[in-house]
Length: 482
Image (tube, rainbow, N blue to C red; front, side, top):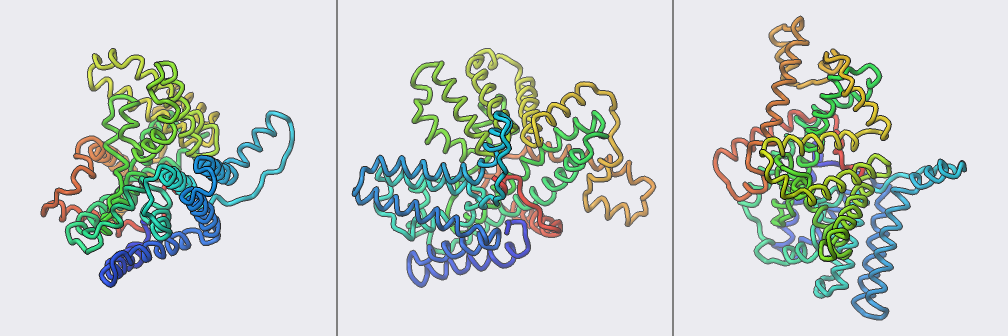
């Protein structure tokens, strides 16, 4: 089950919020049990057959945390072994076939691929398990018990796709008496943010997804201009999809009086690749910095080691996203560009700001194309088509697949079928311009969370109603498979 579904919006969410505060009113802290049960319910509706793996992971990690606390064995040894076990489980489910297929290619063997279903949210909850184990080992969670641990791992707004949050931050909020009582302001602010995220997903992201899906499905006949638009469409799609999800997750959590970290800070306003990664998927960047980059030495061991550590972090980030050489190369190139940013930082500051922005967005967009491609060769094929620029026409199929429900309704209402292609083409242009404005002009949503005013409520109401009307067949989020 996903956030953009009728059953979640009109049943699961309101029931959970009401039961949470009712339980806390009955007994302080009892709401944690509601969060645990709602997390199991939410996960089961998404992929019931994978619940056992999640519960097994929970058992292993809690047992390890128990041993660390009791100091029956070397705490550091238990911590290291448990982290390795978590990583091995992730590798088995996510990368086993990838590793096997590469062994077959390199050695000429023909090992059969193993049929397996990736447990829902495994990349995210594995990282949260690691955070818990390391925090326990550092003595940061001495007063946190089993119920706290279960509430942290199974907290449904972040369970499947984040944002990642530090255990001590989450637990301190969970035990704050002021946060256990219902707050109309937090509810209103949460609904507002959820509404913004819902419309981002079902109107903006899904519209671009249909168009980019058409280009990928018709790559052999797609024109050079179609491929240029594909880069633009996917750049918008992945931002509105993932930031829409993050807004919804943070908004839901705010209704429950628990603050999740912001995941985005207007990333498409970035003026360099390093700046981009300070704004994009910030909770993942923070995790990789805290648990990989800093332990490796960060930037404390000289310039060369800083570059090496940066490349390691980005390669891990690329692999974390998926078992494909496209993700590895995507991570490598982002790491390389980040290192170049460090090397030429002073020279870059002298470049005209719009030029810096244009260079950054061009690099980010081309690498998003690599991220979305099925293979490196497919990415190369699309880039070759763009460079050749043989056909600058936009395919009729692409225009017809860029469907916006409202334009379809107007075409039918005013009997404009003969001008259908021109109207859809104009609608595409307007849609792109509006989407650009949404990315580049408004203040970031998380900065305005505390600014409640009548206009924001009206805008949120419009977004919510419009978003619900756009709900059709439930579409998955891009990060749903990670």
